[in-house]
Length: 219
Image 1: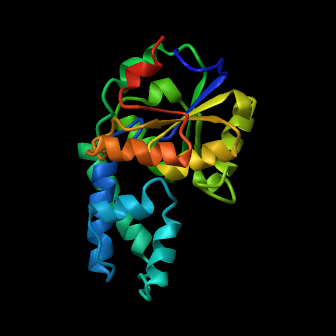
Image 2 (image 1 turned 90 degrees about the vertical axis):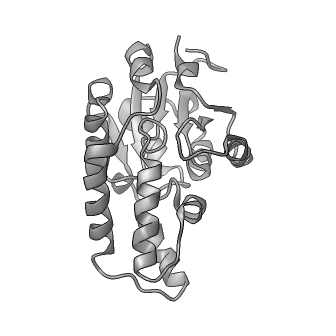
Image 3 (image 1 turned 180 degrees about the vertical axis):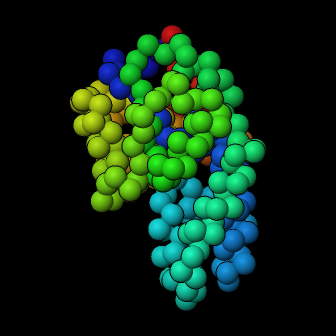
């Protein structure tokens, strides 16, 4: 694997990195928010929620004087899981790259464990990652705080300074940098139509490098 230093662990975000889920999730979130009084389109969702825990959505609505219904999260997840089961695909070249990597890997995602497991199963990536899955409900603070990445490193027995994180959102990059890890931005997901703009945002968040092709990680 071509990197700037020797790494003992490669940590992947899931949505928008391993699986091309963000167009689906952003569309459904925008539709559901709009239905409940927070007008939103996909660019709005990307700007405010990409890479963050679902709990930030309710706080965002409250700040705009909108009280989302008690079952908002359940409604959103039910609609999303239905779409993921039939439409989700891995990001290009991800399966072949995971099959060739000679470095330990794991997932650290802001999504719930149920969704991460489903996403990897639907896309055929489970054999490469097994149960090395760490999600936001396992820690006190989600991204952009470093807790999740530090938890993943601890569970994997890796020194944070020897970890490389692959992230598609500025919040993920900020979290990785706060954890003392090297952070690479990934703009190969289909939600990053404006790759130049996305690259700039990730660099401003502190990404050491930005890539648009998973094969960059191949030996």
